[in-house]
Image 1: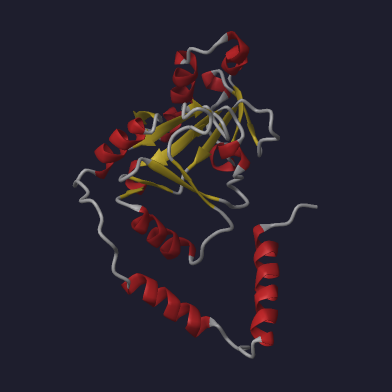
Image 2 (image 1 turned 45 degrees about the horizontal axis):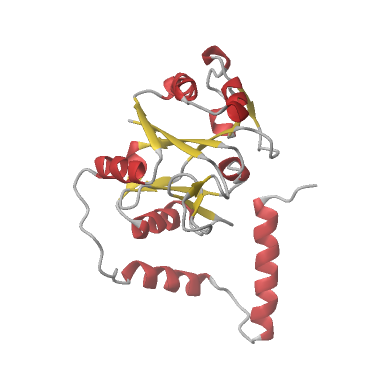
Length: 230
């Protein structure tokens, strides 16, 4: 039976409690956690580039630099049609032509959308490794680098981000922050603690290990497309 995020945290807390006991530091850790959070919040940032007032425009520019594609849409109900437009516009080699079968998986938060009405066969489940398309949300995005921030969780299976050939991320424009510092501050403020994994995605997977030639899709998706809401 798969373990839940709550089970993982309970196991971690039990291990850390035994470590603290062995070190003679048993007791309530609430004050220590609060002190650590206050220290992080008060810590000065190092030198950073100046961000423009329009963080959305900056994000669009940097996402394009990272070879992500972006379409802005005005209504959440338009997401399936936007995904269909993106898939229909792809020019794929014959070996990947099956991508246009429009079959894929999505996170539970998008289960209510009319995928079938847009001609898409989308299953609401984690990928099992052979899905060509993965549709996910994003916790936030970083304007400075054009980066998506995706947090792991019971309703946010990380494999759907990493395994399919094509990753389509749904991002709200009001969730774009200036830099990495603001992204981690937002996680602490809204989640209280870091999840098991924080994935930062700047365009398609790539490597330059072989003869310094950039190859896309080496360790993850060949394509990253962002549907920007708002």
